[in-house]
Image 1 (cartoon, rainbow, N blue to C red):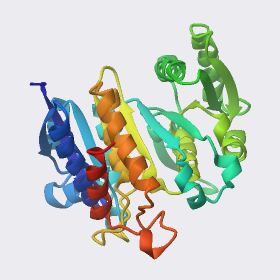
Image 2 (tube, rainbow, N blue to C red):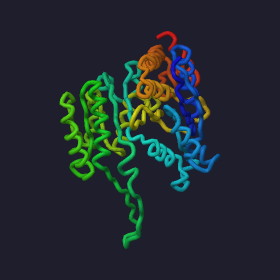
Image 3 (cartoon, rainbow, N blue to C red):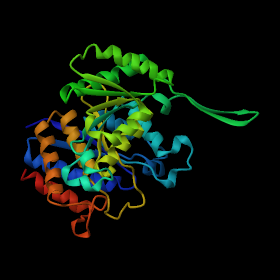
Image 4 (cartoon, one colour):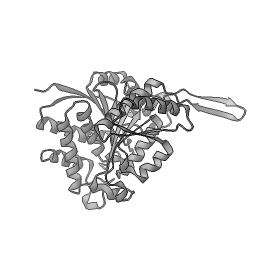
Length: 360
């Protein structure tokens, strides 16, 4: 019998609970198909945790995550908490969780399925063959720098500080080179070195690390140019590595190449095999409870969990093949549907993927 893997489950807010429910169905199917066993324990997180426990990241939830082998997260946030003070905002809990767990990199694949090319606003001939990973630094930069306001003769001035240390850059860049080496040996490092001092340091460190990876082709791309090239030549990118804010923006842009942000999985990693896995999309409170959400991003995040944390490549491949089969058969949720006849609810899509897992 395989060792029991402990998974902390944080449903969060909005559609988070609905998409996580479908991912848990997939986990149950994995237990019946493979020699794996999971211990699932749920914790409060995000807006619902503010309402019920007075904090977006209760201490009990943090301890639960620290004792787990991996964390599965739904989504957090919503207009209900938008006007809360900083310490009582769901997003503050997410930043704190990443920091406390030492998760310094965010891995975001963006793969265009042939059967979904019509769902994208980009021409099929431009999209064809797009299969990239954005590696985003997760715990440094402007999101974590000092923030303050001061009064001046011209009125209030707001300051957000962007800072990076050499070691912070080196560890994320090294990880990106390692990922690129296992794929197509192409790495695009994105910065704004013509303007920002942090970017100039970033580029210097990238060049230093690159000497250890002579087999990987390195390209430096300014962030504004990268935003354009993602639309002009997306299939030419393999692995993109960049700092926190740039990665936040570019990974969402890459997501839309696929036709829907509801298709995009992600992994947040630190040292070792531990990881936090979540869909790229938000909590979508406008459709929460209506069974309209696409669970594929969350289910593909599970595939990443098996690949990166549990080293169960066969299981990861089975989940990915099942998703592809269901899509190739014409099944769609509302965000990617081209006709009412192809439209499935959140639960129906999850059930279809579970069924396909037994046949691929």
